[in-house]
Structures are given as structure tokens and as C-alpha cells.
Image (cartoon, rainbow, N blue to C red):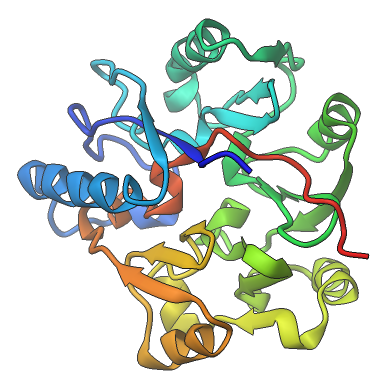
Length: 277
């Protein structure tokens, strides 16, 4: 399998200028932009040891463009660009669409009446042939049949019910070998059943409230490496027992905007992994 490619956007214009999720509300101090640059560069340098980095140029007045997970979702040479629910992020859309086209992706023209936020709410399972797809806050369930049809993949809907976890990548992370890290209270009952039906107990790593609040599920997983803002000793030990190596990179400034390691990245080589026979 080819070395992974990750899309990132430098935080040149990053700031918290509006409130579109609970993390942005009532900030005691704004992000320190110099510190944000240092943190982003360390994340980029860490990821670049395990994947190739592609860069999209940041644009003035688009402070959240740094969160490239929401550019869209990619499967093979196909991509679906996002159509943001918050109007504040909609000016990012032409820049992301242009990048996908210039880089040779076949782009689905999703109906603009449908809210869809890309890799934040679309996560390929790493053991089974399906795509976990969120809804409830920022991606509408009407997007799901379009995604299933375009990528020719089974879409498993999982519904978010806690506004702090507004994309599934903030509380759910498929891992190499068919494992998952997830925070069950973020999902409704039917979604927890959907997860537990597909993932056997020994492959489920439950993330508690403290770790979830530190964005432990918002991790970049490349083979056995898990790059994350922070994880408790207990969670790190659980992951170590499954042969994962946890690498912590402090991302405090981005958490002020409600994003962490996974939010700052989009996997460009991604697709369904056939189920192990």
C-alpha cells in the first residue's frame, strides 16, 4: 500500500472570530498565534515521519481553513467537497474544490441544500468494508445516500447527541487492524448498537469523559502510530497493549477553536479496506 498522503493548511490566518461550536464560546483568552504556528509545525514534522504532506495555501479571512479534515472526503481518485452548515465557513468551499480539481480528483457536485462536512463526519473503518458517517450537527443524513452511491460503499450512520462533539472525528477514531477508540456518550442508542454490532468488544477502546474532553479521539492514526494532543496514562496503556505507539503533540491553541490533530489533517490516500476473511 502506498505511503499515506495528508493534506494540511498552515495557520497563517487562524483565529477565533466567531462561535460555531461550544469550544469557541466564552474563551478567556484568544489563541496565541505564535504558539499555534509552533504547535502546527511540530504536528506537521511528526506526521511527515510517517506520511507525505501536501499543503493547501491558507486564505485571508478564513480562520478555520487550517482544519483541513473538513475540506471533503477522499476515496481513491474520487472526492466529495464539503458544504458547510455554518455560513462562516462557506467561503472556504471554492478553495478546497479548486485544490481537489487541480490535483486530479473526480469531484462530486453535492446538492448545496445538503450540509456535509467531509472527513470530520466520514471515517473509513480500518477492518471492515464500510464508511462510518456522522449526522446530527454538521452533516445531514440526506448526504449519506449520495456518499454511498458515489463511493460505492456501505455507509453506517452514527448520530451525535452532544454538541461538544459536533463531528464524529472528535469522539470516534477507527484504528489500524479494525480497532476503534470512541466515547460512547457522544452517540445515541441506535448508533452505539451499530458500533457494537460491527466491532467486537476486544477491538473497542472506550475513551472516558476526561480523555474525550482533551480530544484523545481526534487522533491521526498511521499504521501503529497514534498522534494525539493528549492521552491519559490509562488510555496510553490500553493502546500499548494493542501494540499502538501514542505520540503526544500539544495542540492547545487549536482546541480553543474546537479542533485537534485529526481536524488539522485530511487523509488523501483512503478507501474501504476489505473485511478480513
